[in-house]
Image 1 (cartoon, one colour):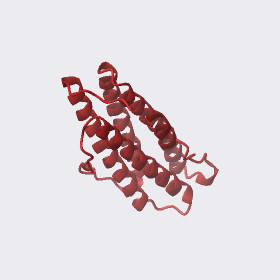
Image 2: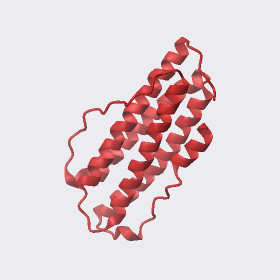
Image 3: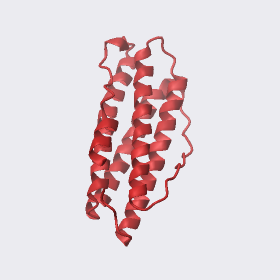
Image 4: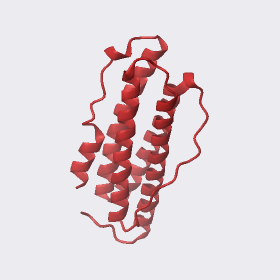
Length: 171
């Protein structure tokens, strides 16, 4: 493992990773809330949300590991206040939140790149891969739900996604 020396640059990495962890925990809470609000006889949307929640849990654990490697004591993180949404807006609201998460992750990857913290940059790059894939699935499912399409005909989330790939590359 690469250990970051205690410098001003490492402080910005610790701040970026802590913010990423908090955003990940908040996004997972939003996905879980969407699962509870989902009213559909078709289990495909619920399966997608459960998969996203599982992936975000794995990502949170990996961020915590990286924080520990950088000298930060493991933390539980915090959940920001969740915005109010109506049941009809579940998937569009998640799309917005995943877009914000993606943008913030990109900004943090830039910090890692500028600090020459390659392990953090790799981790954030894999999170971006997961986020982009999540956005595609959420968009497809959102559009299908809006036109009342049969969700069971849509592509299924493959849980190989980010979590397993990140775990391989971080270790």
